[in-house]
Amino acid sequence: MEKYNIGQEILKEVKAKYPSVTAFAKDLCKSSSATYEIFGKTSLDTDLLLKISQLLERDFFREFSEKCLNGEVAVEDKDMTENHINCLLPEDELHVFTYDKHEMVLEEYFLLPRKKPLVAFCGWKDRGEEACVKQTCVIGENIFGKGMVRPLRFNSKNLADLEAQIPMLTSIPQKAFVILYKGSGLQNGYDHVILLAEKLLAASGKHVVLICSNRNWVDEYSLEYSSYAEPAFDTWKERIFACVLDNSQNDFVYNRELYYAIKGCGYIDAIRNCLGFLHIDGMDEEKVKQLIAEAKEKLSTFKDTIIKEDEERERHLISSLVVRPEDMEKFERHMSKDAVSIWIDVFKDTGTIYNFQGSFESMILGDDLWYSDAPM
Image (cartoon, rainbow, N blue to C red; front, side, top):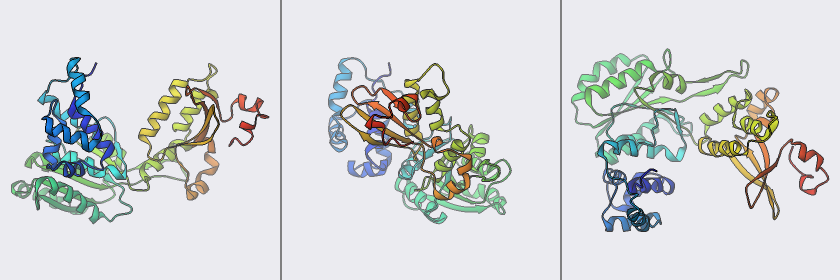
C-alpha cells in the first residue's frame, strides 16, 4: 500500500481549490518556489501545517497523526521528489489542459528542475499570440524575478537566426526563455524549431518554453482528422514535455471527440457497446462506470445531466459533446445522435444501471409513465 505523503496530499487539495500555486502561495505568504518545496515534504512544522489546514479547510493534523500511529507515513526520498510533484506533465500521453489550468502547468515547469523543453500547443483563440507570450513571461517572472524571462519570436523563415543566437543567449543572465513560433509546422510537425529549443536548453541549462499554434480539425469531405500537436508529440515525446493549452471553447478536445464520434469510436460508442448493444453476454456495468469516470476526467466537453428522477430512480443524459450547428450541417449524414449522447437509468440507493436508451426493456414497458417522455 502506498505510504501517506502529506506534501502530495496538500498539492492535490491546492489543485482542487486554487486556480494556481501562485494564488495559494500568496494566501500562505510564501514565494511560489518555497510553496513548491512544501509539496516535496513528508513532514511539516506545526504552525505551517495549521495555516495550510485553515486555508484548504482540511484537517491535515488529524490525518497525519493517524497515519503516523499506523506507520503509514512516507519517508522523504529526494530522488523521488520531482517525480512526485511532476503530475501535471505526464510523458506517456499528450495531456490537454483546460483554460483554468494553464497557469498551474506553466508554473510547475518553471519551478522544478528541467532537462527538457516544454512545448505548449496553444489554442488562444480568445487571446492574441502576444498576450500568450506576455502571460507566460509574467508567470516566469513571478518565480525568477522581474526581467528574468526572455521572450523570443521566430517564424519558419528566420529559424537560422535562432540557431545563430544560441551562444549569445547562453551567456545572458535571464533564467528562462519563452519562444513564440509563428508557423504552421514543418515536415513531420515542428521538427526544426523543437530541435533548436532542445539545443538552447542543453547549451544554457535554462528553462525553455516553446509556444506553437494549436490547430486541429476534421475534413468534411475526406472525414480525416488533422492536427499539429499529435504528430509533433509522437515524434518528440521522449525528448520534450508536450501539452495542449486548450482555449475557453475547448476547441482541441471538441474536434478530436467529434472525429471519434463520426468514426464510431468515441466514448459514447464504447459505453453503448458495454451496455449490451453489441454484446450478447449482456451489460458490463463496471466497464460502463469506468468509461464514464474516464470521460469526465479527460473530456472538458463531457456532460452528465440528471434529466428526470423520482424517489427510486434517476435518468442521466450522458454527452461526450454538444455538436455545434455548423458541424451538424456538415457531418449529420455521417453521425447519428447516439454517437454523442445516451440516457441511462440508475437506482438511487445502489447506483445500479437498469435501463438505457434503445433497450428492449424500455420498449416492453412503454405504458409506464416513467418512459412516456424518454428522449430517444
